[in-house]
Image (tube, chains in turn cyan, brown):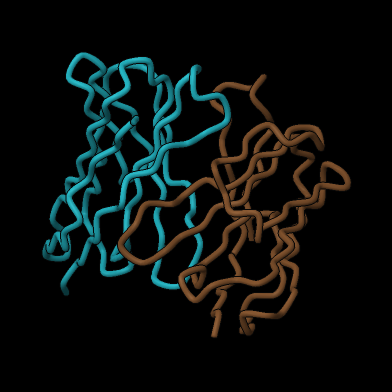
Length: 112
Length: 115
């Protein structure tokens, strides 16, 4: 069973702070890693993807990947109330073909 | 707007009804997916189609029947559902496994309630 683990939260941060969302995965063959944001009652939307060790930055978002530790994270700088949502970590490996394995998601609440 | 359109957005059906969910993608993608999202559970992959051929079927009960008539359209036919099938059903599409990474884009989903 290929597992993707996330803390369900809620993670509460004040507006303007850095939110740190973490994800671990069990399949060492995993190759690509995705962060989706899902607002309540809406569908997941892609925030970022990463497939090389290290950091990848896009605006206020930074994805970090450490394949040796089987760990991927998402940092949100200058958090805004509009960032309040559930963040889903998804992992794909060559062996899993098309399948994306999703975590249960972390609920983020940014308080004004 | 992701380029993946699902209809209907909401559906209420009895256990003896037959209904269909529709998904259409305008992205020129080759792969399409059905997912089920229940409360407190991860997204569950149900079916995958690549170039109109079903490539994955994750032990889904036969009361769910997918159909992919062409690479732009995907259906999920429902019959004799159970109350525990009530969930958000999401369709997604992606370019296909030849592209790396193969990013999936989701439709808005159909909220299904089985009475």
